[in-house]
Amino acid sequence: MSRTTALRVTVWNENRHERQNPRVREIYPEGIHSAIAGFLTEAGMAARTATLDEPEHGLTDDVLNGTDVLIWWGHLAHGEVRDDIVAKVQRRVLDGMGLIVLHSGHDSKIFRALMGTSCALKWREANEKERLWVVAPGHPIAAGIGESIELEREEMYGEHFDIPAPDELVFASWFEGGEVFRSGCAYERGSGKVFYFRPGHETYPTYWHPDVQRVIANAANWARPVDRERPVYGNARPLEAIGAKTGKGGEAE
Image (cartoon, rainbow, N blue to C red):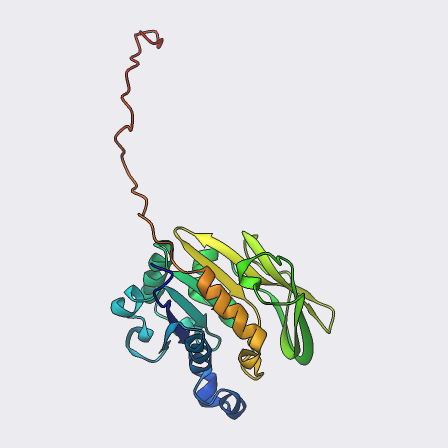
């Protein structure tokens, strides 16, 4: 995909909290998915949305084949996501589609499938401060971010976070209650890239924070598919002539 072509991003969201909780609806009147798609569109991306209750959860073959990067927010209804849709998304990631998993998406079927672990963690809702420290200042996902991002109120996630060691750790969080957490974890899976970004509890206006928006936009650009020929697997013909032959004793003749 050419860098001059607008990045095609699909923002997936359960869209359940927004319909059930007046506080969430007040913060995100058009849904978390629409808020994220809005600032990505302002950043020059071709962003669209998909939600749980649409046919095939909004992730039809046409949608996935037209998606360069998928952003995933889920919480209440991980178990309602169809296994065949999860398998289809996983195949697309392994084939090169980027995946950005946000906040409580750590417990989604797709993230656990790609990680191969429980992805369990500690949590607490106590209106406490979170400071996300940039621990990889040269990483493209941290571009334009200072030494840290401070969020006045957020839900706490704490270690131990049951994930494989990240290929690259971009952010680490400290919380007012004393816990720390690996909050920005980058992986390669097959031909695709995966980034987990922790902030984003539904009852706080986290996705309106300019630095959080910048990180998500940076992550989408980082995870864009690489424009190259895909590897060919299976039985392979030799690239060079194989001339040596062995005799009965196993020595070259």
